[in-house]
Picture: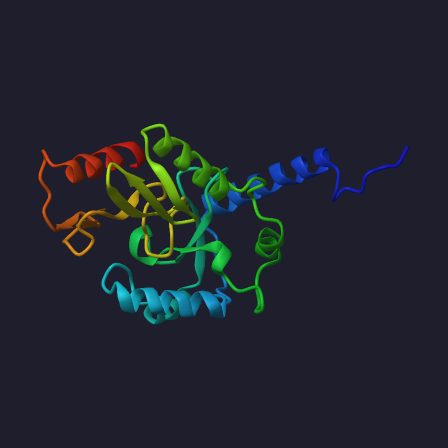
Length: 228
């Protein structure tokens, strides 16, 4: 009989997973503050671009990084430490919307606590929650008669009753404080009049004609009710 190594043994993996969960819960509960080693360069560039496109929603990244360097970082959990990404905040902040960053974006190139180093290399999540989210989202809209034209991590493109619909929705909270599972933006455009103004909604702001009795309005509200 060939013995499995701990790395390939499902029982051993599950035990290690439980231990990591317990360790993270203890760190979060204690409020322990850690040295902040910076964030990955590619993440920094992405956040800079997104903040330039959508200014004012979150603390400017350069200002936020300076706070992290001066104050250190603390770990917090989303709704559920067992299924959500771990987030980090500057020690003096409780503003999850403006100041939180996903722990997975923290750099491991610098000086980082060995317990946190372990979390980087052995993340809490065994299953891809994002993949499950994307699959479930497709099933929901298809059950209402929508044709799925595109479905990736944050973008969903649909077709129904002569309309093309594009919506943006994250499976989990992102760097800008968007709530996981909530629609961020949605656009409903008539295929018969592609040059016409679409219904466009982003973070509660609506532009274009939105009539309660119109077909486009019905699709708009149906998707908000179905996916939010």
